[in-house]
Length: 66
Image (cartoon, rainbow, N blue to C red; front, side):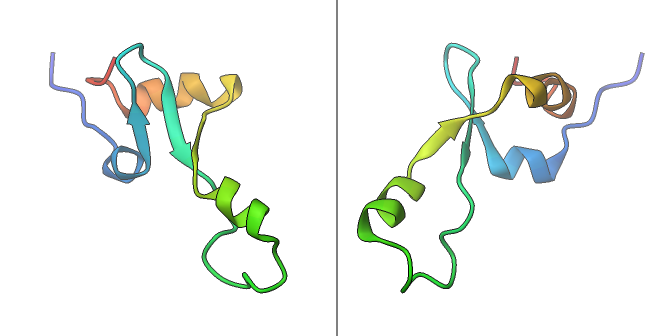
């Protein structure tokens, strides 16, 4: 059976923790920042867990991370 290919775009955007949880960075922090509050910008800088609906797709994209 041939090797599975890792989706390189997904590999750059998602991080898998030691307990196999998937983290991603949040959107809306690249431009138009003047109208956003400092609290909102600060919270957008943190990484968050991927939703359960997307986990199944990401497990196929990152076969050797799990």
